[in-house]
Image (tube, rainbow, N blue to C red; front, side, top):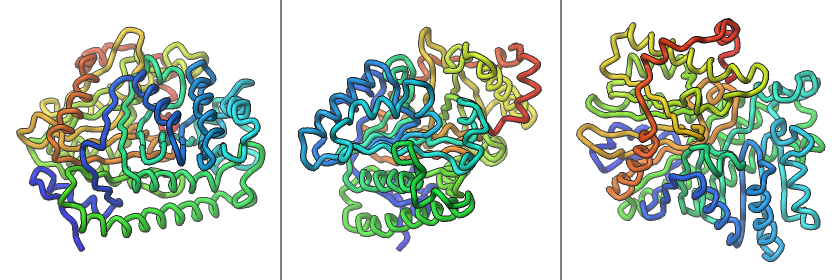
Length: 455
């Protein structure tokens, strides 16, 4: 059976039913969170009151007071509930960096109930074997990371680009959308479990299932497992679409991007969304790190009929500002890449259709990403993509990413998504003239071309 969106405003995107399982929900089950502190409070409350499961995927867990309080209340809840388990998936390189790190902190809190609290640390197959020790700390993280950001408590799923860390709970702006749906929570928990199965368990030893496998064998096995997971849920959700569609006004499509394992759902969806939109429509896109792939850039400049605004971090709002060593040049690199893109906009005579903006807010950094789709004549978005991917080279080729496309005919949710988008743009200003004037250090100009896929 071929499914279609009923609202005319969404008919251009019917192809997505063939790409991803669809989870129909009511807009009342979606909570759009706008503030980092509210994001923390929401996670804290959900983990404190969870009854049957807590599952967390992040790049790392920070070691500050807020993270400790979160772990403390979570583990206390797990101790007091017989059937509650706490499962955590982090990146191995990032989660074990330094003398005080995510792994050590987790062990301190779960002492005595480690049978109910599980930590897995994913290490990209590119670093298996001698490579894991050949590259120094921090630099080994550029090869590939576990970058999914999923916060699940019972039937609540928070999709975000924010890590479980102090900065992201205070003055580092990201996006955070909570969806309450049992099936969707089950899907993302199973996705996390698949990556756990090819990860190090508590960081001590490689998983016995993959410890002696080659990179190629691991990649093929994970690809099959994830593809099977997607197909299983597409089949399951078919019955929900036929029996419950009349009562739903919002449709959720999980999008997975794991270039390492040849899983490219998010890239396919992003390309198709941008190229499917009709003339007169409007896309607002955001990324904390502006480094569009060549495919994305070409679609925006040649195939996309919609007007476009691109919001990125001003160098002063870049999380790498002031970093020691080569990392300190990263804000300059992103500005250089943005300038090169704007030169293409000029070359293709697209300046009337494409706008570039930068987010700058005193004391804050910018890490928000995704897109909002405004149909022709609409002052509110009917769709958004939210999650961990940055529309860039790393997200497509190297890291593990989890996103979701959300389509809605609910005017209430459309207004809330518009409010979310507008809040981010309250601190935005047009930047093309500034981009042309900025000075880029010579060493940054010399290395950007060589290392562009690494950041």
